[in-house]
Length: 474
Image (cartoon, rainbow, N blue to C red; front, side, top):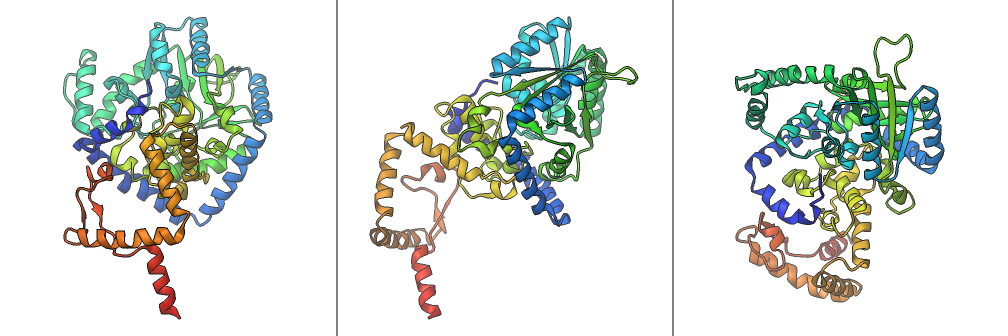
């Protein structure tokens, strides 16, 4: 997927005018958001688990080199191989070489965000391999030639009718000539098509939710079992994983798994949680003959030594985007790359460049909901402000924006002048907006009023109201 994050504003405006997308995004509040809240209420130790998870991941990042080497040693002991890739291009070359050495023709993939990050599907297909996504959501998007719009529910933007049309178009030649309209029938049709792909595949690829240093194991979570089939049926397995996925122990992985499902989809645990360790052993009933792990950096080492290091704690649950009011209006495609929402607004500029993705750190109200629900307490608003500061220091924002910020800063540093100017302005705006309760048009605020009303101020500033309350208390 080629980045187009510099077009965020145009993408967002287009998304706001798309009725199917707006209807689909409403499911976030009633589905994932409500589900997380139920899990939170039912687990008294939820906050304690968050604190402990943050401690574990911070400790891991402090000793990342040691834990990665320990993980590599355990994989080698189990009969697997570990490959190191600094860049997406190196990772693609390694995967293609493994497939060629195995004389493979067909590749199946379990859902993997790192696979999207390195663009592995396009690279494999360009090298002559047949690639099939096995996660239902990713499979739907592969048929439609679309990127995912959510890291947990990649096809959340698609309607049932759109999926029915896609299946009829692509499955007709396979003998499925009747257009299915029921969800269960669509799932069953996909299962029949994909089962043949599983059985015929030479190479299976998965990502990794966690890599366990003490055992050399890979952990994946799915709700369909497709990850298990991708791992065990083909004769070669390739795990692609970022270097920040490693955790020290099985106990640490169990802790994070307790938070992952609850934060992502409102499940106590996902339907399938699978641990794999190396290739098939002599007495194993199934499993691959070859087991490869490709560890990918892609700017993460740079993040490790910067103020943006807390982003490496991310466990890819999607809670931040589920609760984000901006994502909830424009969806994932507006962000223009693999990672959407608040976490994507931090990661994308670091991976594709702040010049390419400069709009994303500014596509945030800094309301803080993302930090409140993050299971590993990543301070996303602070990280977004840090990227805005970088952008300002590198003079990547417009001259008008720089002048406006300089003027605001000059006034804000003079409290008496600030109050002198803001109090009459708030009173005037309150009177002008009193009739309609807000503004449908306003100079210098067209980015807001083009798609929503701007509420009218209540008539006085916060400082004035606070001072009045203090006088009343006396």
